Image (cartoon, rainbow, N blue to C red):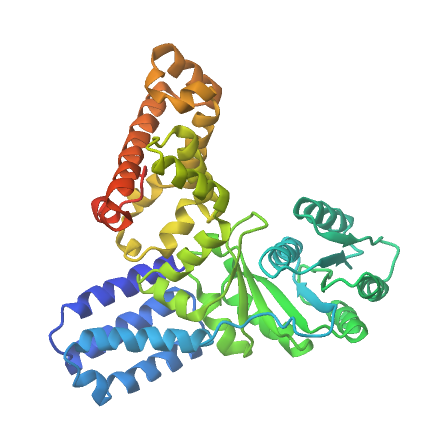
Length: 451
């Protein structure tokens, strides 16, 4: 997400860092480039005009012009205004209500609404430690009811049954009553989507809202539709008292205009970003961190938090004990590291949060796809326990067997073993010299990944 905008703005940032002082000419050129970058990102014109005016007013202030590093000061102004544009603070869900906290989810058909309900339930159950009940009031599409049942079962969340011959209002009301009876913390109600906004749809969802009085009314919108996402969000906001927005399919949206326009146009915060297909692929929207990522500053804090959340503490302790006893880093350990990387959003998810990755060429990024991580895991899974423990025994016939079992070539096995040896050396150095010196030795490279 924001790939195109990031590239343009990071180019501006790079030039500004080399400026000894700001003049009227280079300030005008810089703001013109920022304006074009925002418009190309499909951000609403009124939003762009307001943003540029605010940056210009602050940039012409004494704190920038009299700064020892005016280029850096202007970058800070752009960063701060991006944060203001997107909402300044990270808006959390309101779960302080008397249980059950009722969450109503609305949106157009095909926006990823039902999947977002499951992702939200997964997050409430996992991160918030809440008991959750989901239900589908989409009686017009039996597949939606079946889909939610399957997703709920896969994440271990209760699903209140519904049928196509029921009234949506009755389904929602009965689900809330069931949650009250079973002392469940939160209820998420999925509603019917349409291919376009129509009066019957709006009337139905208003009736559901009035019947269950939700503490959160979230609008799910596909970021890929650009300015239409903003217009649709505004139409729903006029019909319903929305409390926030879930922006889906952001991993496929290179422009990001919807994310930067919705808050200003609707006045409602983006609360979550859908960043992938997995039920765990839902991120809280933090304007400060998103602004940093757009300008190529990364989101190291977010990366650390994600690592802490998904890390298997038992495996970490087991690996630490192995190092303490002088035992080496084997292919089972390497596979564990790759699986942890997948849980953190894969290589692309990590790259998005690492500082300076905006400068990495598209060719290098293409080499570091998540499919490569999956292939590495498949190769290790095709080995015997003895081979994973002692990879030096893997020679000709063994390599051909592993390649056949993992759907790869012998040269892929050779490359993987070489990458493993590099990782092994890093881990050995970490045991002897500590993490800080190991990171210095890496020189900004991801272990096992070509740069």
